[in-house]
Image (cartoon, rainbow, N blue to C red; front, side, top):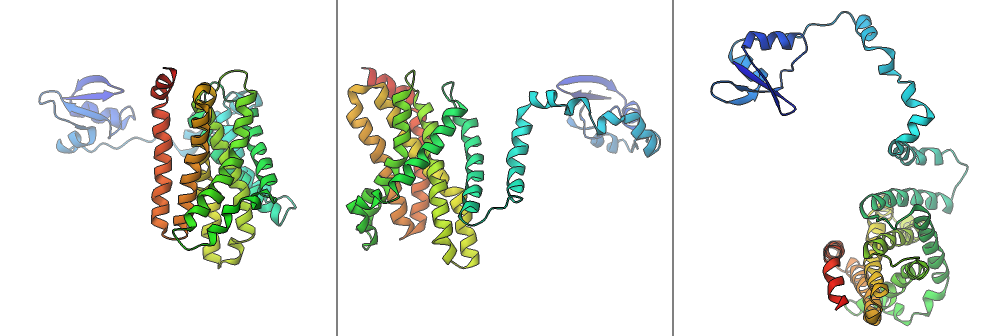
Length: 341
């Protein structure tokens, strides 16, 4: 005798021939869970029927035409469900369609040159943005501020890297031999780029109608980092990457659209974390603002320095930055309790 289990509910017991008849009628499946009513041995219906030498075959419910008639046209074309009203009830599929097909639509536009790289970078930035929105948003996050942060970062980056970045004396050390180049990458590259990404966060925190949670500014920091990644990615694709051979350029372009914007987002997410604490606990704002710029600048600079010297260490630094941000978020409540004292 066999007991059938479906959705954690037991049915039976039935003898093997009854179970085989249910299979032939399509009421049971051969891989349904089952167990022996006497020994409590668990397996599938197929195992118990094979053991009994019974091999049922499912009966067809008429010809293909008859089967399609029984299934009904609504199964193939659910007219009511694809109306505008019903589609708007489940926006997830619309978002999925827009993200999945927008690049195909872009291919129809009469654009070229620099603008192509920028549009494609925006496409990947949108994918990252949706990912961060899903995992990091809080009740304080809204789409309008997210978009504002993104383009405000691009404006800040454009202004700073249109010539102001050359005022940083430490840039000259990026051409020095390793390990002296670390100074240039931290104090020159890291400090400048992380400051550019920090500007929108400072504006958001200052204009906020309520104190922003650390995770809220981490989220906006991630968006700021993605925005910077778009700018930098386009710059490299039309200059450095364009001079490489096809295979190298292909890999570098993909990295500039995916991994490296994510890394920039991680650095500025850390910046957002400390910036939030500086706003929440102004008694400690000097040290917290210093950490907000110093920690990501150091991680950024070390990554860049080792990327040109010994890349495996750079990868390890990148992983460490992600783990560090995760640890910060986990300890957020503990840190707040300490700073309240």
